[in-house]
Length: 92
Image 1 (cartoon, rainbow, N blue to C red):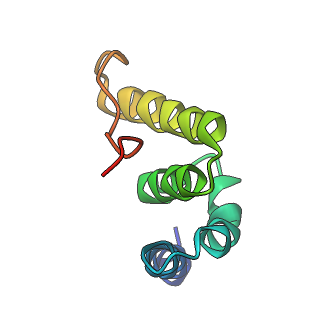
Image 2 (cartoon, one colour):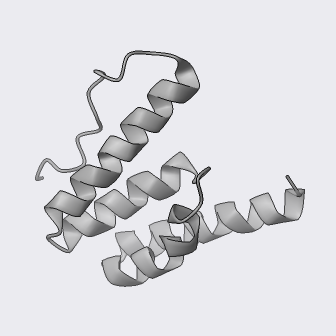
């Protein structure tokens, strides 16, 4: 992969993380949308998108993304997919 393209992908994820922290979940999702359409989406983009969806009250979509993340990691790491997913959906 082109180094510049990868850096742009990571920069978009970082910008989305800032938006999410500042309460702009919808804008964060907009920034992450192109990454999520990729079959090789960065795991941090999938996780942040799930967090943004959770903040917007879109729990089913958030859980579906977490499932995608869990399955993707299991395939990459060759581990069982029964591992527990992150606790981002747990309230403060």
